[in-house]
Image (spheres, rainbow, N blue to C red):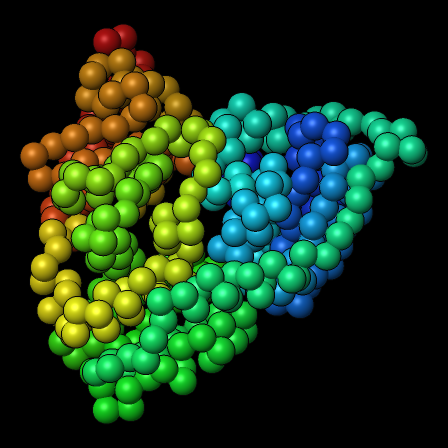
Length: 379
């Protein structure tokens, strides 16, 4: 089994046994009686892992609401609707991966994530008396509420024909039920593509070429702001705020808040698609015309292998002032954020700028700096 690490809220599960250990570790970090949404997507074996996780959480006093069909964005919506502590989503593709987030899609606290990792490795699990077990309930009815909310504002697409590419049967079903029959068969053809885990969205039309996730988020943000919405975005999306008018508030990653349905497009790729469609239909614009009206933003990430001492190199960059205390560096043409990789033998770089070339150049600068650090020499 590869080393387990849950510090960013996601981990690979190598066996059914590891799923049980994860559930016991995670549940031991929650309070007895907490509500947790549990869901899965991908291959059929994900259902086995959900069953094992559900039984383990039940055994240590956690109340579970199970979604038998859906993607992670539906789990986040369900968690907020039922006032759950958080959600756990199992995705089975090339491997089985488990992800957990707070009820509004925000990242769980670093303290909790680190404690899950510690308990998993040490098998320090909580014991619960037989009379204090949890409860297990089905939450599939929430799907109908989600569909009804998505349908609001979705009218016939005058001048637009939309199609979708996805490996998710759930996303395909939503598309068929909510969007397909609204198409204008003679309209401008736009194709939306979902990533394998349905967290990312891209689009293509002859007028725009390929348009990536971050640009679509910018388009949706502008659409909502133009209609008087007040948007709250997590700190990790703060690069968007600098390129938009007033109306956007940046909040701390761990700040608890009630997020309106419109705000959910930041973590809900299907809702993001519907907002982009509404933007194009109401403005009677092609995707290319709409994109030309927003400031460009491109996002890239890079893994820099360092071997032993990756954490010390990151600390050295912060201590020298090259990065701020949160591992960020802001330049005239963009910004970057550096964090220790999950296995601890490298540094992940995340950069955004007005072009892919500029974002890559920012990563190049950080990588060169990392290569110049001499851990044998005190600075």
